[in-house]
Amino acid sequence: MEGSGVIETWLSGLTDSDLLRAAATSVLEPLLTVVGVVLLAFVASRLARRAVRRVVARAKEPSGGRLLELGADTEQLRASSVRRAQRTEALGTLADSTVRAVIWAFALLTALGSVGIDLGPLVAGAGIVGVAVGFGAQNLVRDLLAGVSMLLEDQYGVGDVIDVGEATGVVEAVGLRTTRLRDLRGTVWHVPNGVITRVGNMTQEWSRAVVDVGLAYDLDVDEAERLLTGILERFAAEPEQRDVLIEAPELLGVEALADSSVNLRVLLTTRPGEQWAAARRLRRALKRELDAAGVEIPFPQRTVWHRTAPEGTDGQAAGPPG
Image 1 (tube, rainbow, N blue to C red):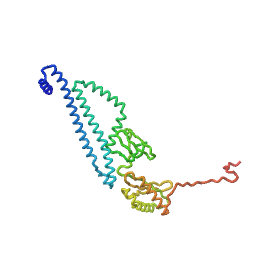
Image 2: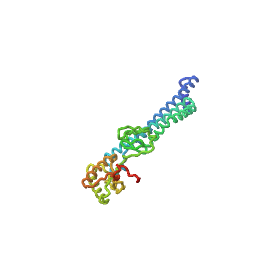
Image 3: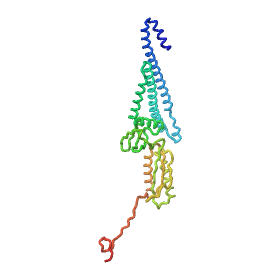
Image 4: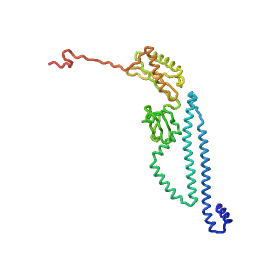
């Protein structure tokens, strides 16, 4: 090898002993190889980290195209940017750790091979250990893969209200292995990402409230729709609602002919997470204005027929004649 020749030439100027030159060569050559491998791995690791950071910084740049189409304000765009940055940082950290682990693992194997260690048994043993760990930690691997998929697809983020089956609540933290959310009663749920088979996100980009209004059967449907349209227009014109509603309230019409009422359906399209408060305010406005208009909001009623027993039976049904 050229390296060996250079080392031997250099050593020949220091000593005339062939034994010393051979011993020094056998030590210096692997040592220089190890040092070179370590330096290359260090440089490659730094370059990989710089590349990952550059990609992360570019991915964190806000787009907001879809939100701008929906008429989002500055606060919504800022929240979207923060969420995008959090997701990108998590993926960037994972990518950086993975790339550096691969680089240093390759460098370690190369260094061990350069000092004369047989890598065959070592690789075989590592394979057996990897299989054993894989069987023992398959749930962990499943959770990690599901977490990466969830972050890539942006299924939900911190602050979203989601339904993942048994648990529904506000997302407080999103990790590669678990998701933490808090429900309405204050209970904190730690859900492994691998067991989440479906996600219902109620606050992504925009939200919607569905409000059914029950009116009496004796009220003319056309008149009821005109009345509700006026109420909805006045409701949407309130300053408090203009900052919440993305679109004007939509009256769909008759939704159901129920037992005691004719139900008309109203849709409210709101900013993310505002649908529940907006629906409560609309129900309050409906109750106030319908009462002022003298329109009955029906309630379940039941007609009871009471049968009176014949006289002289003391409440007992009359039997057949004797």
